[in-house]
Image (cartoon, rainbow, N blue to C red; front, side, top):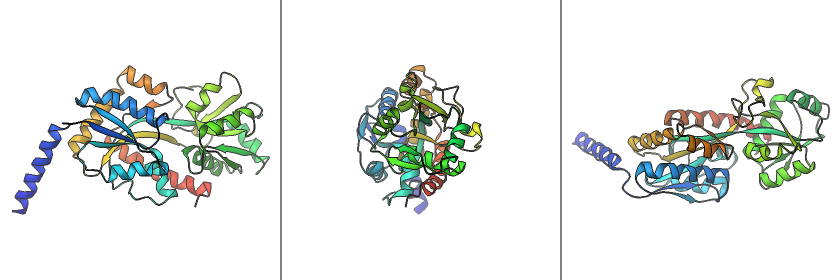
Length: 314
């Protein structure tokens, strides 16, 4: 009897997945409108809606570094109608810096990383170093005398800098700001000489010559700055930090639904318009498989654990 009940439930789930979606789908965004994550979400819903045959609506639920939105989705019905535009902090950083009411691995079904962006080590033009090696030598000669701008404690920019300093054996003090905008302003004015920032924050100022980018943090060179070497290429093999945004569903969502959404997103990476919209906001299209996304979450949980420790965040 139990076997028959299980089989009946399995067929019912498969039938439901095959009929999905029958109503609008919402994609929950963990930040306010206007940022990179919100922009990626809106590019994604524009792409998915005509392909799923139902409205796909971006819904902003900011707060607690994205943990409010993450918990909301984790506790939602696993029926495919509530998805989460996760940023790497909610699933790989926040679990190491604050108590959270969700498990980043057990409570979600990864669907696809839509896009990723590396960070650039930007220095004010008044700082003498013209290369990463020169920068390391310059800082080593002035232990504890130089500051770097941080968009906030525990942010990707802060942790990327802390991780690099640890691996290079350098000492610098963090100057904390409430976001990348104020941090960037003080780097431009020379109040703080260094900022490991998002490329879309740095690139607009390169033409003026007020900022130089000495290295990028990704596993490969950024398409927006192809002549700038990665940190790994410049003597620190294995160094890689990126921030990604990807769609996840509540755990228990039918695999057919997960795979359907992943397939539709994957088609986006073959579309020049979709890729171009991401590129214009400094994001490289990824469109990973669910398995690749799950692997990235596990890997980044370990990476950011090391970075949090290097930053001395309790």
